[in-house]
Length: 122
Image 1 (cartoon, rainbow, N blue to C red):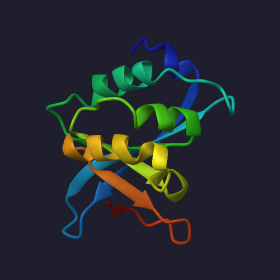
Image 2: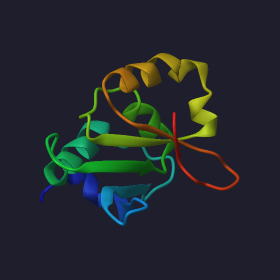
Image 3: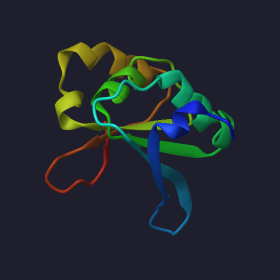
Image 4: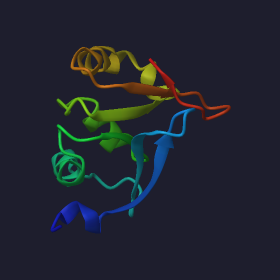
């Protein structure tokens, strides 16, 4: 895969397994190589779609760049893309409408409380 963004980020992944031990999704954590660097959301989504196409399995994005996550919450996503949203962004009034739009689009939004880090659906 030739995606320029892959030279600007570090990725880690793990399966998301249900109680019956069935795979539900892949959790993809995205770390910027240079903190504070502006990263192109379109390039990230192209790279994700190459592995997890819209008609494919679900992927949960855990983005560790505030600006990239903010940009991600303001674009139309494939319905198989779930987004992990930390509390400080989930309660931001500027994101209320984008979060509602994503939920209306069928995207699952996961709220990450700071204490136990266990994801819960909005």
